Image 1: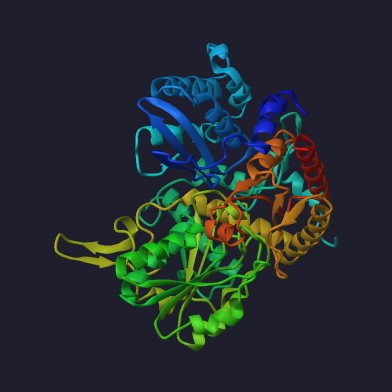
Image 2: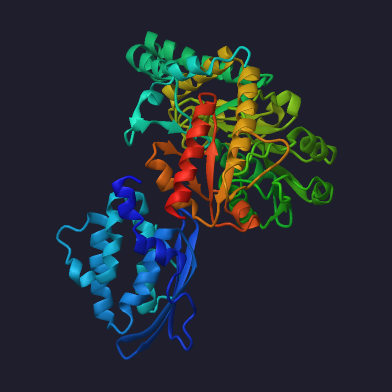
Amino acid sequence: MSSDLSDLYQEVVLEHSKRPRNYRVVEGHNREAAGHNPLCGDQLSVTIKVEGDVIRDIGFQGQGCAISKASASLMTGAVKDKTRAEAEALFERVHKLVTEGPEGVDIEALGKLAVLSGVSEFPARVKCASLAWHTLRAALEGRGEAVSTE
Amino acid sequence: MSGFDVQKVRADFPILRQEVRGRPLVYLDSAATSQKPQAVIDAIVRFYQHDNANVHRGVHVLSERATEAYEGARETVRRFINARDSKEIIFVRGTTEAINLVAQTYGRKHIGPGDEVLITHIEHHANIVPWRMLCEQTGAVLKVIPVDDRGELKLDAVDALLTERTRILAVTHVSNALGTVNPVKELTRRAHAKGIPVLVDGAQAVTHFPVDVQDLGCDFYAFSGHKMFGPTGIGVLYGRLERLEPLPPYQGGGDMILSVTMEKVTYNRVPHRFEAGTPDLAGAVGLAAAIRYLEDLGMAAVAAHDQELLAYATNALESVPGLRLVGTAREKSAVLSFMLDDIHPHDVGTILDREGICIRTGHHCAQPVMQHFKVPATSRASLALYNTQEDVDALVRGLHKVLEVFK
């Protein structure tokens, strides 16, 4: 495998895409949103239980490529028990990572999400990596309409 | 293969001589857009270098030459699809515009509340959305011919769907997502038996086999230049003269009028009535060059190459573990849509791209087809006259790499 390809499909990414975490509808959720990538037809939904300002539980469901599933799976792990502002800050970091690459990004603060760094070498795949995050943001903002990567 | 030298054909396409991602380019996305032979590129360059001027207006030599080239291109198109009269050839931007033109002229004139527009389940969006829009504008109803699991139309259902309220049947000649070749001659016969006109979307057909609009008997036939080795931004609507002549104009301005006062406009005759504004002159010239290129090769030889390569590719792909072809119609053109295990087509596309192999992944602007087969997307390799068995072999090797990554 070429090196940029193995950066994209790192072991952790493949593992999360095969066994996505929190692949479920959150019981008693009070926030939800649907996301859609019209380019490929991928769709996912995110359900969240928010208490006060804190994301107590989060799940996702849907269909997508390895990158979008891994990104969604890693996201659910990363934002659980975080405040809205912390989740938002994480989204900003992830977005910078997948669009511009690891330089200038606080990799430590990203934790496992750092495995998405390979995406920046594949501009056509940025939308796959960010779909779940846009959907999370829509859910937190309480927007009823489905979000789209377009 | 007799009479068809694919290596010689490849040499006519300069873009194929390059390496991408450090490997020889393998281009398997011609259903999205085809590559252009040097003859087409040269024709466009020559037009701009020697003949460029606006058409039908100027009294000077360049305008005469440009008019001759543009109207000559119309005649070339007429010959290519065997229309009776070059007035039946309207230059448009592409298939999509051609279908919109018919929906918004024929459709607006003849279709009202409760009337029915009949399409098929395997149309791409360009032959769904203009009709959906028309139905919303007029209160007409969109009806759909169903498809079976091979991707063939359920012909048993057609006669019942052609009702006394059906005002038009709009059907693709070849499905871009599945490769299915529809029996449009038979469908036209059945529709005409009930007095219903037929539009055929030929975007994926004209590049693969000979098309004769008189033999098909259809009323309208739409196709694009860029899928048939010509430039982008130019396409053709063929319409039988008796269908076109009573139609109102589509867009206003430029050459589509005979005279204008502030009180009254007199519209030009067909085809000019439907060619508002300055047309894509160089595009028409390039399209004519593409047609001459195809005619020199011979469409029968092109079709034979297509079928031979399709058979080879079908066999080769079926040998890949976990691969499932989507669309296995008995009459098929050289399009191979497939799923590979449960690996998402976007992942397949990215890994093949790193091997220098260009395929299409996604819903191919044909989401209802994807819904029928219960897949969000497919990987699609589409073949053209410049593809070889080696290209197919490279694809198979690439797919094995995909399986390795995801094992």
